[in-house]
Image (cartoon, rainbow, N blue to C red):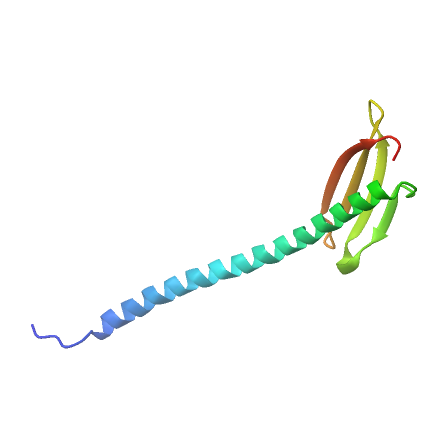
Length: 112
């Protein structure tokens, strides 16, 4: 048998396999983009919570509980609850624009 090239059937099978691999990679890239976007939102929320925690620790005269609107639709609430042994529980809660929440807690001296 003397064959100089690929048959039409072989070419179609190769294109179908290549297409399936391409679709799988597109799905992977779409999921990676979604994950990166979600991680950016979480990172922003954690940053807001950490800065709120530092502000509450530094600003001794801060009126608690305090709620403030942040850029991009985030809301930050800071509360202080009595704890045991002369300490208090400082909680900074950041609410996402879609309703999810992230809370950061820290025990501080009651003199805060």
